[in-house]
Length: 257
Image 1 (cartoon, rainbow, N blue to C red):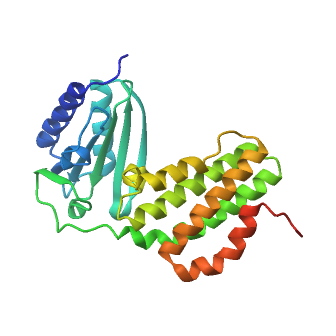
Image 2 (cartoon, one colour):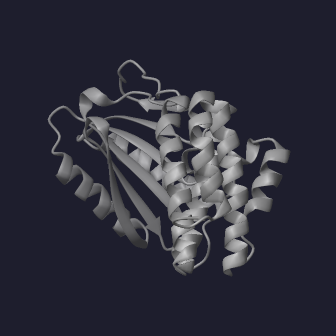
């Protein structure tokens, strides 16, 4: 089995659209993602949004589409993600490594919910805007200090790979906060590479280059410092309150020290 090509992707997407247009269980369809935004490249996946007919049986419609996909292509696996409003995303992984996302929207929920919604047919509802990224800052700050705390205890306990994972999560959260500050989309790190080069260089230097305890402690200090600076940009008062605890965590101090 070979890697998919852009031509393979286009042929499959065209076949899917043609099927949607003739499926009585489907009332509308749209493209989202890179194809809708005009940013598609060789590695892009397929993102097809389907509006269920008012009287459609959702489970049967999903099963029919899955059977059709399996008959047309070699499907390695599928997974479902459920979103607000009863929307189901069935994600296909093809043997060619192409990802295909097909979302099934209840009839009255079909609408644009993000920039880049290319209507193919049907009548969508009024578009809704996603909440501003900054609304997630409060939760991200809380998770950030929690990851730092668990990274510190994991290192102290000799749980090397738990520590590595906690440090990775701390870095991801710090980058998420930076993306919010710069008005970039941090979902699945989609626009992280657009952050200022000096900030990305700092984060690259903060990554652990090995799994020995000394290197993990160095990474914890650097990442905790970077996290604290991002907190200060989002919520200066909270940063002041967190500063003593972050200094202790980053310093690696244990109980009673």
